[in-house]
Amino acid sequence: MQTVVERELELNLVLSPERRIPVPTRLGYVTDDPYAVHVTFHVDSAQPVYWTFARDLLVEGVFRPCGQGDVRVWPTKTEGRGVVLMALSSPDGDALLEAPAAQVSAWLERTLRVVPPGTEGQRLGLDDGLDQLLAR
Image (cartoon, rainbow, N blue to C red; front, side, top):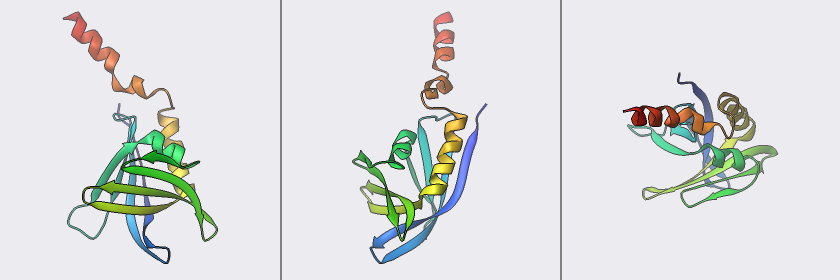
């Protein structure tokens, strides 16, 4: 049975130290894809922007800088409140997004209760599929 854990929140697209633009965002986690988080950004375009990356990357990024390449995540403080910064890079451009740390952490805790760390592989059904394949 598939379980979905979602959270709507507002992230800020950081344009400069003085300028941020709010971006309605949905964090998504699906037990059928247990290693990944799915982030949907509702920007001013015909279609939302989708990003998928490792749940472990976001979990670690709440506590310390991590990632390299296309996705980097790190905690910091802005105006006295805890935030998580996500630097995203693609051939279409780069973006720096600021998320409220408490809301991201609460959502991550929900995903970790549904699929605890280290049990993701059990959700993939590889053993059942292999058994069926070998039984033929």
